Image (tube, rainbow, N blue to C red):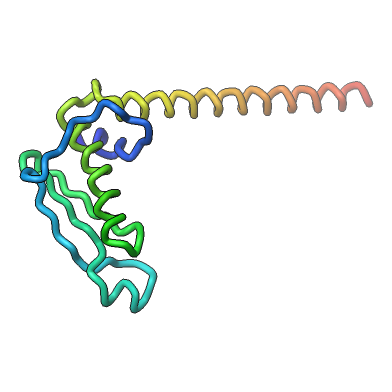
Amino acid sequence: SVPLLQAARKKNSWNLLELTESELEEQFVRGDGPGGQATNKTNNCVVLKHIPSGIVVKCHQTRSVEKNRKIARGILQEKVDLFYKGEDSDVFKEKKASEKQKQEKKRRAKENLERKKLFKEMQQLDKK
């Protein structure tokens, strides 16, 4: 189920499982990455664990603890939804649809490239 969990973080997923605060374990830790003293001295990174499933989310996208808490809950909600619903999850369906669109776009780009090559070859043959 690891690939399913990586599909999380897609927008417009309305039919997600609800999380209750009693099922969550929250910690505030020091963030990592660039930022120097601002990240080294503040505990604004949120680590959120869903106890029944064991899923852990770490969020340090902003300098605000409250924003990180909100973002972490959103990510965790999507991952828990994927964990329990699997392929029936809206998040999974969105991921599959976006992959399909991406493949279609690649296919069309490849066809256009082939057409351009053929056109250039035809032009060179006409010049000779």
